[in-house]
Length: 259
Ligand SMILES: [Zn+2]
Image (cartoon, rainbow, N blue to C red; front, side, top):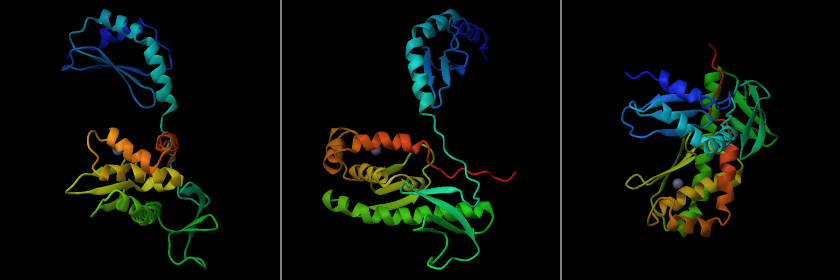
């Protein structure tokens, strides 16, 4: 095992800003030095084991300007997903509209079943342990989301001559708001958390995946796919940027588990 100590010393000679998180990572299979900036701003210096440490000093010095810009962007774009407690008054969003959680023992008048987003801006959920409240809320997003996809996907199915498509709403982790699975699956999937975002962003997500479902020629986001998007949603590029921004603050299911 090669020690990373000489590499760290070489890096220290560059005197990068003190608030940067810089890590030396030895990569046995690499042939050249590399840099990677992680979401949030951490910098990885990827080093082949046989590297002359002086080369690191030189390399990072040369890339300093580039790194400064990348770290700035990565720090600004760091996700800030909220963590929920499932207590009365806590905010949950549906299509960008704010609702306050109210835990109840019975469905109030006018509410057919629990849980429910009620028009008066209240999310009614049965009083129960937090893990179950969380599950009930996620299921509600999934149910509402699936109905929305099926309803709004119809126009694209007709226009794009898409048949036998299946829609699903589930947890897609932290990297995807939507996915299209090619045939034989032929599925458009959306993240349940997407339905908390403004409806114009959910519309973008749907159009994006439906454009994939038309099986355009070429690369997955290539000219044919873009042509379809331009036709269906002329301002899709703006919505794409808005989704990145709004998505950073979306609730993805994180909660304060009792220890
Ligand atoms: Zn795509």
